[in-house]
Image 1 (tube, rainbow, N blue to C red):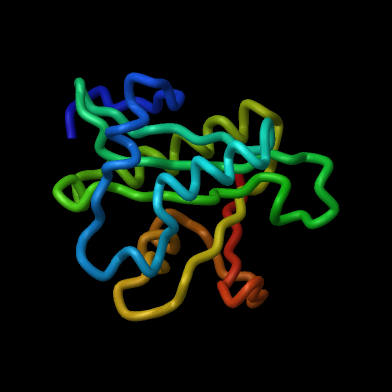
Image 2 (cartoon, rainbow, N blue to C red; image 1 turned 135 degrees about the vertical axis):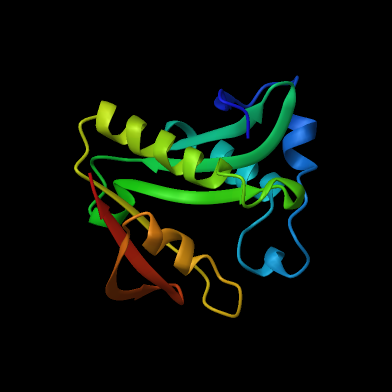
Length: 151
């Protein structure tokens, strides 16, 4: 990772690279594709906050958060919805950077918690999220354990 990774809005200039991100074999069962995520972002409108993780001229990942402060379910008010880092860029700090950027955006919006969930299984992202400070709530939604990070 360079000293200056950044998040960028999805644009005509980067959408192909975003949709072309490839994970390590077997990781596809843990996160929806960028294409599907962008379709959801379109459907959810202003609630969705999709971004590419860029380093130099290269798209190295994708992150999408949801911000819906009026939602009746607390975990959907500020939610880390998707995170995908390209296979050849994993383990270099891009995921941590992307989550920190979502945390910064949530704080900027005045939020006090960031929620997420994951698909369980060998190689799932639970250890990554717990290292970042997310704590499991014991709740399971749509088959996924829910975790929260106090901001």
